[in-house]
Image 1: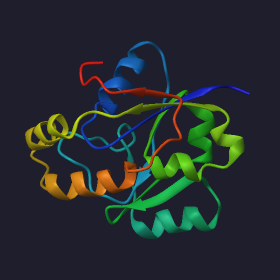
Image 2: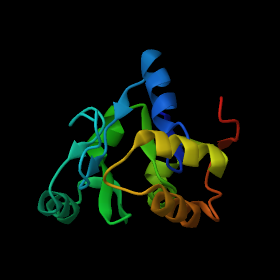
Image 3: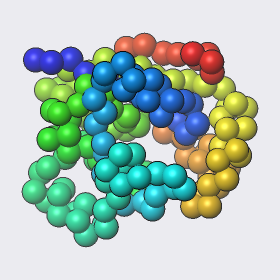
Image 4: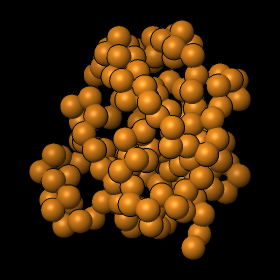
Length: 159
């Protein structure tokens, strides 16, 4: 079995930054599907596969996802095909705990646990028109409150 790396963390912890650095070193990124709209600068097929809810639900019915969940009113999921293809992926806390052992046992999970003040600052700089900083912080704090299913935890925002 081939080992893989999952990067996990709340909004604005540096998941994309770490993912891009790993891709620069030859890692292959696993692109997840989502029903949310793209943020400014995001590209379909590179950042996410942006698909309608009906298409996402059809993939669920066909058993195509290694994991999927609803978060902040949108659905997110990584297909089994994408899981097998990639060497690094970004997941949220719920996704890690939902993985069947056959998938979870192949992952080394890096948890980015960056201080809330830094995250607020970064989220404010994004100027996200689809979401508010306060709502993101509250939702993330709830999701990561008791998260312990990781192999490595990074708390330095300048990792």
